[in-house]
Amino acid sequence: MDSFRIFAGMVFAISVFLLVDAWVRDHQKVAAPVVPATTTPRDTAPPVPTAGLGQTTPSPRPTDPKLTRGERIRVATDVLVAEIDTDGGDLRRLELTKYRDTFDQKLNFVLLHEENEQSLYITQSGLLEKKGLKLPDHHALFKAVQSSYELSPGADAITVRLKPAAENGVQLVKTYVFHRDSYVVDVAFEATNTGAVVVEPFAYFQLLRDTKPPAGDSKMVPVFNGVEVYTEKDKLHKASFDDIVKNKVSLPKPAEDGWIAIAQHYFLGAWLPKPGEWREYVVQNQPNDGRFTAGVILELGRLEPGQTTVALSRLYAGPQEQALLKTLAPGLELTVDYGWLRPLAVPLFWVLNEIHKVVGNWGVAIILLTVIIKLIFYPLSAASYKSMAKMKVLAPKLQRLKERRGDDRQRMHQAMVELYKTEKINPLGGCLPIVVQIPVFIALYWTLLLSVELRQAPFVLWIHDLSRPDPYYILPVLMGATMFIQTWLNPTPPDPMQAKLMKIMPIAFSVFFFFFPSGLVLYWLVNNILSIAQQWRITHVLERAKTAHDGS
Image 1 (cartoon, helix red, strand yellow):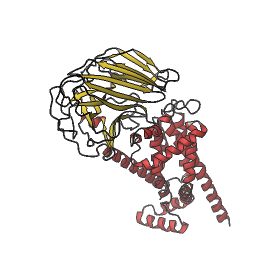
Image 2 (cartoon, rainbow, N blue to C red; image 1 turned 90 degrees about the horizontal axis):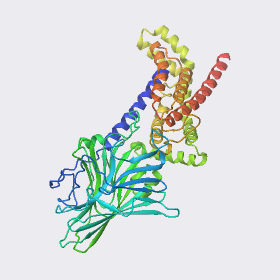
Image 3 (cartoon, rainbow, N blue to C red; image 1 turned 180 degrees about the vertical axis):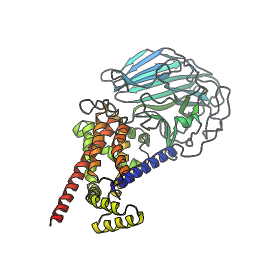
Image 4 (tube, rainbow, N blue to C red; image 1 turned 45 degrees about the horizontal axis):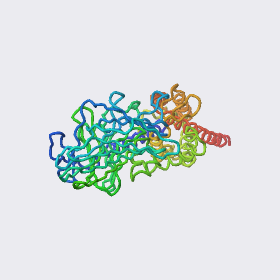
């Protein structure tokens, strides 16, 4: 087997792994049959998928096509700048002050925003009633004590209390609590029955979003954008934006644990109700094109006249930092979607993170991790390069054999087999060791692609963001050059067409890597340089040994 066939085998193996990875990811989106809609239709809202706090579980009223605006309440902590609208008491805007905008480094990254900006993504919450009575919800008009709040030095939290007019004898107080150095916001309802009849309220907490991909997303980087729902019993359910538009949504059964989230590249919005409270998860299209809600409904029980009940859910709106997500709720770290290679990707990221703690530069950490992986696989790589080196030494004999017997393919094949036996060469020796390493390479690919820690992390000189393509294409060009060197080190295929393809492939791969994050290209560049050094050394030793043998 010549070098072209070895290379083709590598490409085939990588393609198979990528196809399997894509297939698994696609089929993870629907983990169970779509739950049928059993909710009783109401005049104010379409039926929603529900299985269970009861056949009469109400649903939130749809949001108006055009969001109305009231007064704005500004809240600033050390990591967040939030805006709450008194019309609905919704969280309409959320800036993350430790992260920069995707395009303008002078601006903060905005995770939650209104449709008059780049797209629509806000939170909504309120009360529902089992018998259909209208209670204060995200259409109510709230009042606040003040219009601006800022975290004071030494304070650990900011509390914002909102109060609407009572409806059908129920008085509501909505409270937001923002914490120091935290992307978690506590959202609480205190509902008091001031009327003369019993009411049976539900609390709902939802995210309203359109299906536009986040700004800056590249089609060359296939990351998941959509809804994720997790319960301990049913595990993770996923639905992409396309699934939601086509109503291909799978939801777990009502449970007393779990969370619901909207995930995008690097960031997450999630409702995290308290464990031990039964909740129902709901995803539904809004009557307006391209908008949907994803949320949770909590049953609050019977509320007698004069009684007060409390509902609470935490909102997480921030980066997908795995160590942090693990502490917030079971399974929340799964929103970092490594797919079926998670058992490999998680330890790879742990090692990368530990190296970064020492060196303080993510680019240097990637280089050192590449060196470590190369050392671990040194025996396999050595076997592969020895096989390639032997094939290169054998190339002149194969060429002479082709010149003598090239017209008779059967005799040519038999002669090659005999030659391989005589020279003690396994033609698969250069391919199989590499195939074994492919899952690790792909796991590292997803590790580097999905780590928010690399977002806007500088390396050296012109590389200011390892999550973005090289602005001057220097790394892809260097990587292409290393591929040319590797081609030169390999035996030249006897077939002229194969030889031409071997020369074209480095150019094609370089162009392909123009659109990849520079952190990924850096990994491949360093890996290629180490491979060249190893391959050159092995080839040099074998050629010297052959020269000495022929001289004797």
